[in-house]
Image (cartoon, rainbow, N blue to C red; front, side, top):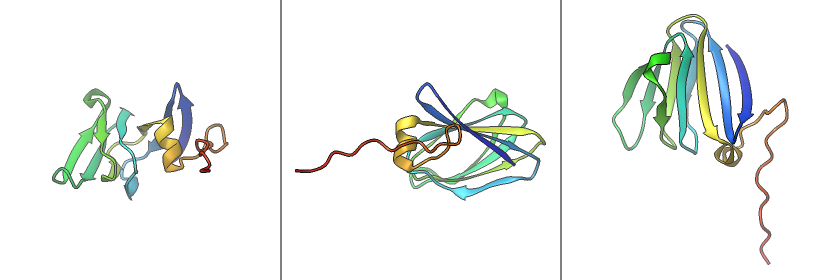
Length: 115
């Protein structure tokens, strides 16, 4: 699996190129985000406290899937050279502590000091 991370126009994007059978292990984020496939095909399994467990097939034609904050999810590539994109607002990525824009961590927003 190859990972690339970018910041474009206020959106933090992670692009993963995967071979058939590779898995992005079950995990969750503190914020809502979008997941889509731009090449190949993948299955996403979603566990959420608001919805029953779901399995969806993602292809370039299927559009994006919105994942609620704290929804566990796992992605499995069905085809070789599948490209999975995750998109999170830059502000949300900062809150979550996401890394890597050109090899540099995104700086968290400045915190106000209480007086």
